[in-house]
Length: 263
Length: 270
Image 1 (cartoon, one colour):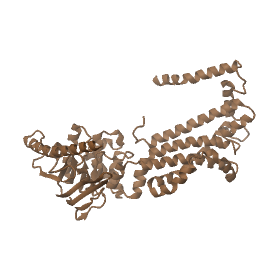
Image 2 (cartoon, rainbow over the protein chains, first blue to last red):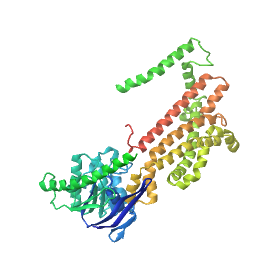
Image 3 (tube, each protein chain N blue to C red):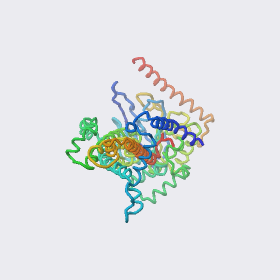
Image 4 (spheres, rainbow over the protein chains, first blue to last red):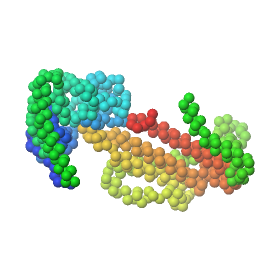
């Protein structure tokens, strides 16, 4: 298990309309094995922060340190699950899961064993030779999770992974994810704009502000799992966080109105 | 049942055309040199297909059965198409991959490509004869040019349109440059490349017929030109129909190959 240290991270995007500060003064320490949700409206920089941790877009200043090493590039120690699944459509389910291991030049027997275990873990055994186009969205996301688990990375990064799924599939996969997390003890950084999803899943919710993205609230969720979304405690927190997110959402809407007026 | 129905529905118009054609030919509406009756064309096609000479002693039955002029011509044309295509596409594919993946290589080669691309292969005929003389080589050269550009352009486009999400996912899995190229970019570009292959084979097939009219003495293109010299209209049409059938066979084969290689691809109708 690994910790993630985010030190004074700034991120500025240069656009034709001038510089946009996407992230400002982000300082977070994520403990090994912690399940952290980044919550906020679109444009709050939560995906930017995740991409910085993934190594896709390095911060403009500040640094991100994982196990005493500064992050400069993407790597299999931080497996990422994308909202768009990003499965390789020309590979079967089993080949998608095996790919990361083949890249690491693992032995064939070992790869086969890992793939088999992951197919079992995510209830995908009947689909091992299917292509992604023949799978539902929920199934695809299971494959994407299995592909990341195959890397056996201590950290999992998830960018609104269940955003495109229907409510029932979504709940089902949330439960799967919690089960896997409890079993394998990963450090998870999970981006979402769903307040309920963040309360259902996380040890800790980081609410972010709309442009520039800063930490608005660092909220620990002290409720035993499985959590009941109908319980009073759940709803109290949901109302409270809803208030915070709504404020940022309104700033977002106002900014867009202003932009539209300029046009 | 539905299949049978759609077959008959599809056969209706061609059948009607044949009947009108046959009837007007028999009524003597036009000379048989201008337009022979379909029955005469069919008879000629059959004669063209069958062996011309009696079986020689010592010649195997199969060799004799395949010694007909039509089969020899079809084989010669097909051989030229395939050889020319393999040369043209074999050069276009690596260059296209490089040009698609590397902007510097692209900038280096693109101006030349853009100048040469609009020149129809037919315009190379005089040079082809000067450079390669007579026989198969000028044909190969012309067909290779015809196949080269469609495959090249589609390969470049295919590499360039690869969705960035695959690249990001692969980098996240720790994929290095070579593996990225062979196992991510190349397969992601395959639908485009194969579309180029299909166009390229089509062009190769057009060019082979033309090239056979200039420098060789067999093949379907040569045969219909030869028949023209003797005003054998029935043989001209028989040759044309053979060209059509061979083209259809090639396209069906390529389309089968497409469906197999792209069995993972969305948007295929099967």
